[in-house]
Length: 477
Image (cartoon, rainbow, N blue to C red; front, side):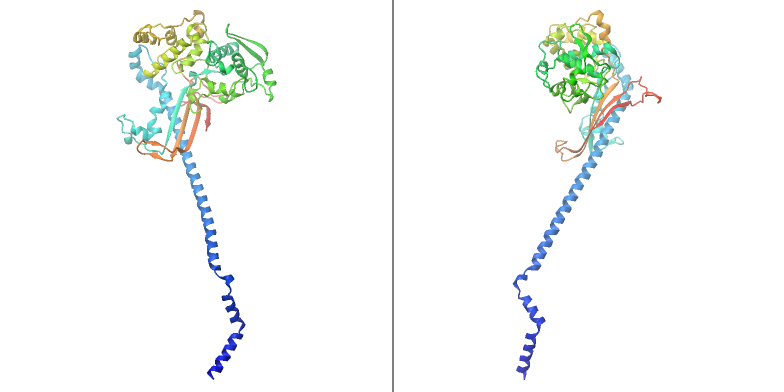
């Protein structure tokens, strides 16, 4: 009986379709490992999603850090700019303090002090706190209220615009007087009175338009760009006169891409590139020799037409002088010119103070005269009268002395203040104390400041020059 039931049960179980189907599925080899495949697939998908989230998060974080450092760098630059403006505004008070010492040294009161040229050093506790801490000044800046590590720094380059050769319409001259003054400066700047001149190769090759452009062509084109007539300026360096001949527009109409001269003053230095005959070589030689160093340029469009002998490079002073005394050895002999440049650079490096209170002091220097405490006699006594470092003094014609006197000035009212703000050092070298990996945030403020006390706002506004000056040009890079 037991066997009979067992057989019946076996028959029933074997005949059950659901049980058989489950057994068949359990034995199907095609479905073996499906759970592992699903798990691996899910892990792969999650890996891709996680990697994308990680990349997106890292990118967003890097962008946020860069934006943070850029904002910090911008405000470091603005702080350096405003502190420099304050320093310039306080120059009269600083001059009063140093007057007794200066007068004891040279026997006359000091001129306007170029305090702006020392802004980067004087403002270092505010602009570069870490560097100021390492300076052996004997001052503990940590005790000063408001000073501390800002996580950034600023670098200041500031100079007077009248230390450059002006190529724009001068503020103090008009008409033929203005054209003649600028023509003489430009021709002297380009080495026109020297033979041979180091700038001769610039005018011996075809320009960007496939034409040969001489010095006189460039002089005429620069003048014609800002003067208000349409007649071509013709400069005669032998007689130092300007005349008109033909149309100034003909040169531009013959170009493939025609345009016309502006007949209005330059608004920016970059506009000089539009002038006929001004190519990349000319621009890189005179306008922007070092793109990162604005003080290296030789020309300006913000000058009054007069040059500051206390701050202008010797090459600029030489070019301005030689526009009036072109036939004298200082202008025709390269050896004499090199002596003038080397002597003035050496004196400025040894004694970094302005020497010329009045324009007449500078003219006495180039003429080799004056008292024992004047610059040329002092150098002559120190070096010896026959020392090759001394240049041969010039003779200024009496008929041109007034004109030359009006071509120089010992004060500055329009200044370039170029401030670069840095923040977010990638790697700081603790041992050497400087940033090796560069900065994530870098902002440069290129500004032209006007401090002229005679400035008045345009109508209908009323008032006068603010104590911190006004912006003549403002650019964020």
